[in-house]
Image 1 (cartoon, rainbow, N blue to C red):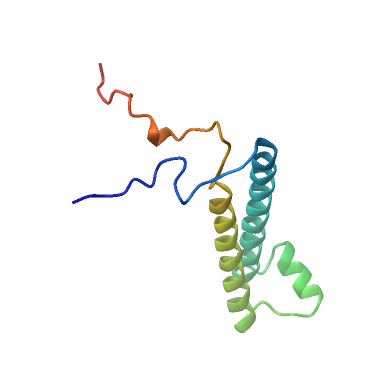
Image 2: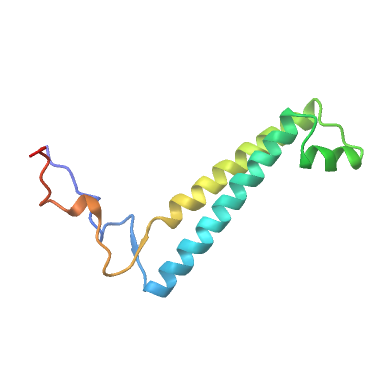
Length: 113
């Protein structure tokens, strides 16, 4: 049975871009991913606790974090965490022309000698 090798650096899952573009994509995708994950955990905290920054803001607006509001906050938090993870994964697909892939290095020895 034959299998195709998708781990090569010129595969369909990786995009080759110039170094300046790679740096910008890496910086901003990581920044946005971290921001979305932190915001997601903030919403989860507001959904599960009565104290916390977002819960305090909601209670000052007169919104109770019980029942349906708690469920909506939890689902929104999970969605933000998933979206942040997706941004990070997509940001890792970019490479520069000179970058190799550690899986492409076939000359490594797998013995403990």
